[in-house]
Length: 113
Length: 111
Image (cartoon, rainbow over the protein chains, first blue to last red):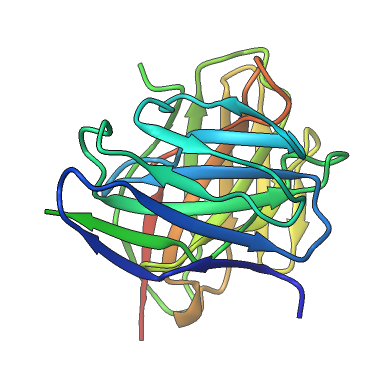
């Protein structure tokens, strides 16, 4: 089955630790995205990548880093510099020709204490 | 002012009811509009695009009013399974890859 997978579903970390969230897609999509969702708020774009080995900052990139070494994979690292890392993190992907039709993975709930 | 504003609800309606949500957007140059559906603690899924002339998909009708800068979603004959949060989404003008998500309107359909 084609789709987007994110792992793990739940993640707990201590403050000061970096953590990497996984995102893989087998939809042959060109573009991939990372969003963050906080309670009662809309999704906010962290980073996006239109093509392998290239990515752009979204609206809230500070404290996060990404890589895009393969078309299928777009991991997100939440660094210790991110002030409020506890959130629901969603990865998405789309075809280049229709970037507005984005397909989302099931998300990772990160809790940092 | 938020770029996309929605009434958070919840809208609590009985099965079979018709319910409508509105969403306003601030950038008059926006070109593309969408409704996404998000079930509790799940990922958003594209419900439908919104076209200038209005469009229908089964029990769902989406309309766009450019003059007043609002988008609407009408759900007829509500089902229990329609209970979810409905996100209004508008394209960003600084990049064709960027979307602005509203914070959502929650719908509860009761038996």
